Image (cartoon, rainbow, N blue to C red; front, side, top):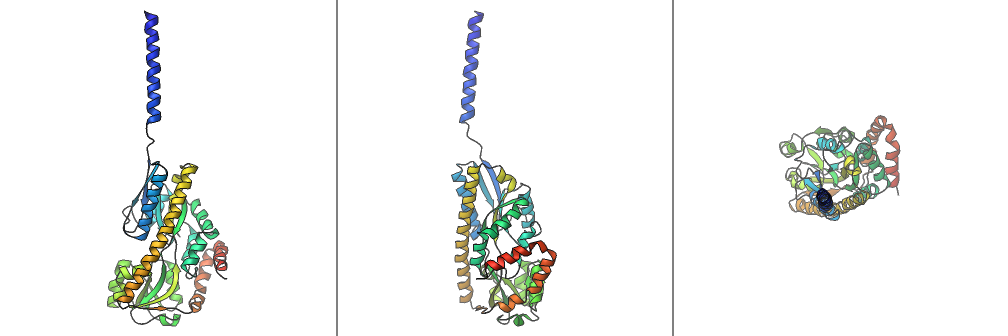
Length: 335
């Protein structure tokens, strides 16, 4: 009786072990939930592209990775979000290179006035070896840059007259973003740079606190600035890329297969964002022209560019090790 009982016990244990093994292997692998930062509203070109990125990653990883985009900056201000992504508290984000400078000095080069001659040249260089060098510097600081978005070309606009030469800026109070490079740029052109919150610009233009500002077509349109500053002059002094970045800690935790999927999805998202941005920029151009804004092309930017030499000299005095990067970007566009 004892032998039979022992045999039955062993058989029962084997069956239980087999059932447990089957249950383990049949249990779905839990998806890795990614949180992504985005400052823009859901209908913005960047936001649409980020949602496409999230969908493609979730689909092609078969649910192993499920990114979720949080729009409108609800996860914090951009400098804070950059830090959170660096330390892995956030998994990914769409970041402008302006606020990246304090973390990754190499990205400050991209904020130099007239460093890029056109949006097409910016994309070409950022998609190549120059972009790889910037990405390598970012990775050392905990951010893996997978692709580059565009944010248009920023130009000058004011309340009184077209800007054709630097002399036309003499004495004008011009709002700029809070960045020493942009302050130095306007000062070097003979204007009076006035750092100011974006939300205050419309009223300040209307009341004469400032005479002008600088931005891209979509911002000039959506902010209503064309209503109070009807002269838009295409200096295109700043063409600043943005990145779709993943936290290095998150990236390193992926398999090679999933890394490839995520990178390809990011590149596809960048192509979509660029196309949507171009379409939106043209639509904004047409809208402000129809509303009565006067837009002029700056036929010769050489005088503006020459005026930037003191800005470049001061920058390279502070960051001498970045001289080769500046020279290589300039040389790549010389032909």
